[in-house]
Length: 325
Image (cartoon, rainbow, N blue to C red):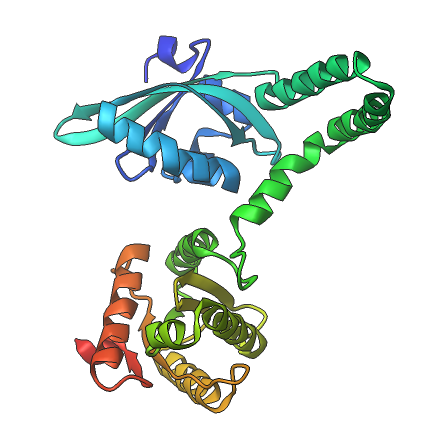
């Protein structure tokens, strides 16, 4: 990278089509407090909070794929101190030597625009209430208190949003987004330490007939009861998440292929023997264990194929992906 770009008055980084940082200038390194090795070859999302990752997925990636560029995207990057650095980002997709790259520049923003807008809206409401009736003046006093509280809560907003973004509202388990992040974390740990881990996918057998016969409130109750059972049986280090619909996933750290099959069978037997309110259910389970060749997508795909085999061969059974090879 030439000196002019390296010390340009704005941050610069380039990522691959998979989001891996390929290059970064000194201005951005200084802005975030990293050395070059601390950012290169890492996924850009490792420098984003969960909330910003959600925004990145729902806006940046689709927009860059559709239009080839993104302008004036407001988000926060995580500095080495773990503090958020608000920035304005412009990005463009380019092809070099047959590969797709996304080149981005960022300018540091000193003001939290969204929070400032919220405070200004509160002030406007205050001005309107000053002109209202005596009853409205009582509301104004409450609004003054709300205004003071909002200023104190600014530092807590991101944490609250992250908690909401990671939790399934029906079952209280972690949701699909948290699962994806945990899966990437465990894969990275495996690549560094060779510490094996496994994945279990649970699917409630004939769940549609439960909803059709007894109604969705009963179906919801079954989902809640199953979530409680999975959580109660899991180890403290395990990740229990609702993947969607009637599917649940467990990430089992430090678990081999043999261990995962044994654990899955224990869960299957426990679920079959445990009433879910006034009802009983069975589950089909697919298992997969990490290998050197796996990514998050291939590991999920192998577990899903094993699940499909369990369902296609009588349900209420466990299949490990190794049996399909």
